[in-house]
Structure formats: structure tokens, C-alpha cells
Length: 164
Image (cartoon, rainbow, N blue to C red; front, side, top):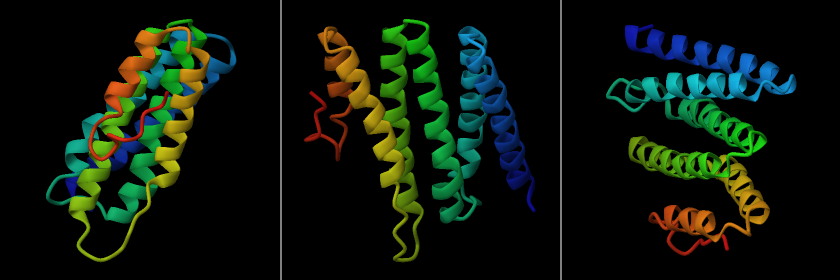
């Protein structure tokens, strides 16, 4: 295994540890600690992203089945945690960042495919959209947040999929 793959493996292990610690803190109502852990888990993933989408990247199937779901989990945990802390603005910003990251990864993944295999990210995109719809319903009284989400989701090819 190359040094690059070892770095990715170490990042994924660190991600898992941070998620577990964040979940434990969240379950005990220590939302600030949980959020720090979730942010740390995301940092590990983003740090590894250059390696993952680089020239000597892991198989496309691994990216679709392991990396992308981890990315979604980190973002959704951050959103849940910031909502639990009554910080709708930060939750909104995290949702926007999640959409941009996920779709950036989807485009990068599509560019990496060398065979006619279709790795469907629909489940992960669906989870993110469901969280976005729930957020929009919960904060319908905050039109400025809904407008930010709609604007962020107008990234091609999402231009026709407004949430509200």
C-alpha cells in the first residue's frame, strides 16, 4: 500500500474515532464538545480529499461507498449539533457547505470513472436533501436562511431544484 493510501487510511480511522467521540458527547448533551469532534472529523476528511481525488486515488467504488458517506455523516452531525445549540445560522452554513462539497465530489467522481459503471450517490444526496427540507420546514419563519439555501442549491445541475 502506498504512503498516500496509508494517509487516507489514517484519516478515515481518525474520522471514525472523532465521530464516535462526538456521538457520545451529543448523547450526553455536551453539544459544544460534540460539535468540536464533528468539525474535527470533517477536517480529517477534507485533509484527505486531495489524496482521494489525486492521480493515485483509491478505487471509485471505495470513494462512493466509504468517503462520500463519511462526508455526509460529518456534515449532518454538525447540522444536528448546531441546531441543538439553537444556532440556525451555523446549521444553514453547514448545509450549504455540505451541498457544495457533495456535489463537487460527485463531479470529481464522474470525471474519474473510466468504465461505464454508474456509482449512484442518490442515497447520500437524498439524505442531505431530506435534512435540508427538514431545516427549511423548521425555520420557515427565517426567510433569509431559506434564501441562502435556495441560492446554494442553484449550482449546476441543481439550478431547478429549489427547496421552498
